[in-house]
Image (cartoon, rainbow, N blue to C red; front, side, top):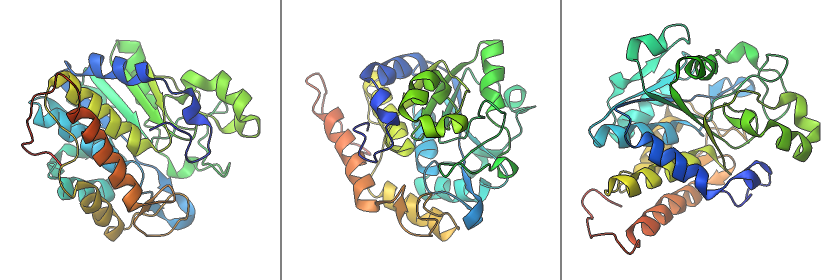
Length: 281
């Protein structure tokens, strides 16, 4: 999850206790919202990183008998709904929201941000090419700020330093990425998880939650392929290449499938794990 395989440095700050703390805190929450969506202006499309992680996370909570919704913006909503259908998550629970009313309409006890841009010091939003893409980024990071004010727990998952939650590591990242300092997110969350690919961080969080719950709630069968094919058909592009292809952050589908299978194998091999393959990979 965080071996710096993409060479972006951010994941060097990740620690196992980030997932442990996040899982222990969120496993017992009855209502959780997952916020995601990253639009790529030069391709006029959302990117492929984000939807899979958000849907697998929300589905895990829902299948555990808890309440869960996925929140995004109008530019990304079609991609997320396509991803939801591919993974068997109710399409109606994927919502186009605004920061002003989302928390009151669903009243979550916890909000997870994954691959969602957070504002920089100047209040604008930047991609990895240091381009200001504020015009294509509705201010859903405001939800993290509002959650802090009213005591709603938050998690931020990111892989570039410009996402919600990466503000927790602003000083460290400013030293590690001095040329990108002005683009780094300053938006903090209660727990932040810096990883190689945001989807991977979401998948690992589901694996950690599965450990707490005692039942596997992650990928099943061909989930990864089905979700990726669905969002690409609906217009999503790789955020690195800008092309509509079965890749995420420049990495082939087989790489992401290997991650999901690997997480299940880790979960299954725990010494206290009883055999329960129902619905598993």
